[in-house]
Amino acid sequence: MLELKNISFEVSEESGSKEIVHDLSLTLEDGRFIVITGPNGGGKSTLARVIAGINMPTSGKIYLDGTDITEKSITERAKMGVSYGFQQPVRFKGITVHDLICLAAGKELTVSQVCEYLAEVGLCARDYIDREVNASLSGGELKRVEIATVLARGSKLSIFDEPEAGIDLWSFQNLIRVFEKMRETDREGSILIISHQERILDIADEIVVLADGKIVQQGGKDEILPSLIGTGSAASVCGKYNAGGKM
Amino acid sequence: MVDEIQKRLLEEIAGLHEMPEGAYNIRANGEMASRNTTANIDIISKDDGTGIDVRIKAGTQNESVHIPVVLSESGLKEVVYNDFYIGDDCDVTIVAGCGIDNCGIQDAEHDGLHRFFVGKNSKIKYVEKHYGSGDGKGKRIMNPGTEVHMGEDSSMEMEMVQIKGVDSTVRKTTADLAAGSKLLVRERLMTHGEQSAVSIYEVDLNGEGATADVVSRSVAKDTSYQKFDAKIVGNTLCNGHAECDAIIMGNAKILAVPQLEANHVDAALIHEAAIGKIAGEQITKLMTLGLTEEEAEEQIINGFLK
Image (cartoon, rainbow over all chains, first blue to last red; front, side, top):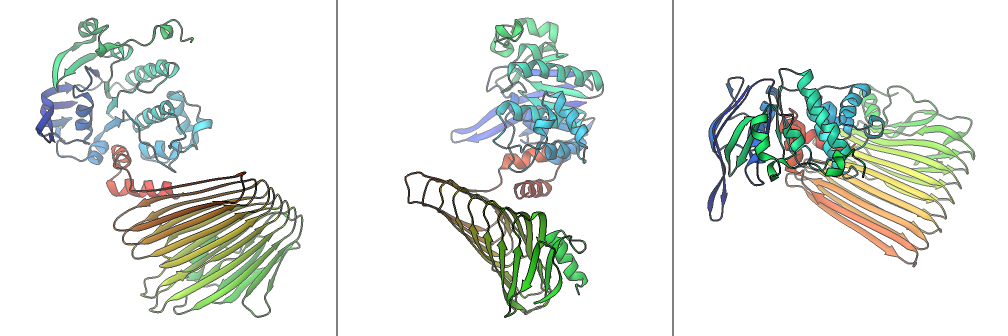
């Protein structure tokens, strides 16, 4: 279980300090699937980075299964079971898809094991396993590899920051299935996704709307989603896609 | 005979656990330690004892030559001239390399000068690894010189690796390419401590349709110094590409000097050079996978130099 208690995060600017997250408290129970949405600049990505340990909160506490992890490093949190899928995945010259998936899994994997993770995100392993995670991969391919690294970690808390960004329509459908499968196969693991996509919001247990660093709405999907439809916080994919994905 | 230290050096530079198959010439502490020739590949000592001639018969296919050099005596300095005469229509792999273990206070130096005369339509893969070890105050110095003369439609792939332990190196590689020939150079270099490495390439594209691709990837740590100086000269219709991609760390210094000279309107020449530190996001990503900062850095460097 993840608990955020009175988390604030400030950055200093020329004109003084600016608060990105303000006194935010949130609980994510085991096996639950939360989607955080809200307007751009509302503090969603910052919150995800604070949970992963990339940004340290200015005040407040973070607990994972009752243990205070507020002062723990990124590495320590990762080892304790926090995974984080970047909104803009990082490229590495020379490190192959195979290498990266093995690093994520924390052990050497066979080709067929790596293939399983790649197949989950819709990449044909034969074409990708030896490719470098460099500029030769398109944004969408890179994003799918990024998601595969989170899957390979199989940790108890998986955070995805806008997993749909840069993903094409065909893969988007696949992505929804990835999240559905994650929750079906791992009843203990919890998932926190930052997204504006209606179809991702639609498979959440709980939706949190963040604006100006504060939670402005929170509740079950059925309660919150209807009020968001048509707003920027719950954008639908292109209409042609719903008609069968034929362009 | 080859002792334990020399065996370890051989493993580092040539991946040899035992005597290689095919032709070989192992030089240890300035003397020939072991040699084997085959029906197609002959190795002859030069009359004045300064090196060897390797003669590969025309049409030799899928054979290899290993010519590693190991030094484990402090104070030893040698200059060796090795010439390779490769006939037409060959397909061979040549593995060279030098390992110095210096536990003493005097410098140990090996300067290997290799000349390649590549026959028409021949395909050569050349691997050269440099490695230094030993904790003596004496420096481990290597100054390799390589001269490549490529016949029509021949191709040569050169893999030059120096990852560890060499205090000072000046590498000079020159090549001239006849029509339709293709040269591919992949250099991997890492310097640390107070090491210095200078790498100079000069490639003349003389024949129509000649192609050269010279790519260096390097990491400079601590207070080490690197210079990459690659010049490609296009004298006819040809394609040339030089690339230097370097990671700088600590207080290291890197100088990249790519040069292109086009002496013909159809010479297509490109150079790229990039020097930068490891991106913070790369470290962060690997830390989110459970690696420490140091482990992340090591993985990034290993991948980059792979």
